[in-house]
Image 1 (cartoon, rainbow, N blue to C red):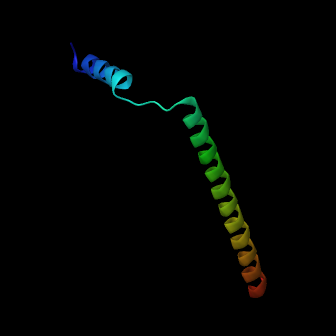
Image 2: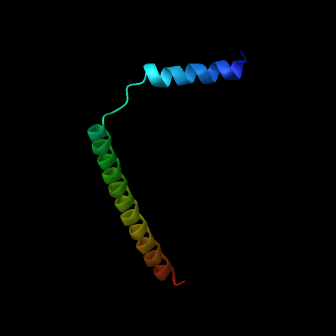
Length: 65
């Protein structure tokens, strides 16, 4: 058997017999956690962007540009 075929067979065997897959409830819970974290980080970055934009406008107005 070729190296590639052997690799694919071993990977398939590992996915079937050695990997512990989450239950549907666990998957839903972790998805909600990830989406919540995504929304929070997006909001923080948006606020930081808005604040830096206003600071730069203030600086440019003080310089006279």
